[in-house]
Length: 121
Image (cartoon, rainbow, N blue to C red):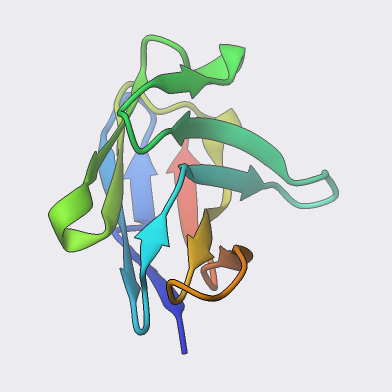
């Protein structure tokens, strides 16, 4: 059973910083790209940042220059460092990863349960 567990969300004032973590656990043979998404109330879920197994990254335009995604392949963990936070960054942040649980299985898409980030003005 593969699980993604996020941590690090919370309440912060505008201009502040938070660091999110997402650890994958369970039966894992390989993990391809890992990503962070967010969903604000009344809005669709959107991609925030994405990092490949080779550490190539891409970001939503709205977070470029403020957020940094990184990963520790040995720990099956992805991080999102969020600086200069704005009220419009308020959302539930979700971790996502396509994971192959075993050598003989297919690749399945896994999601974390989400962590709330609230930025006050």
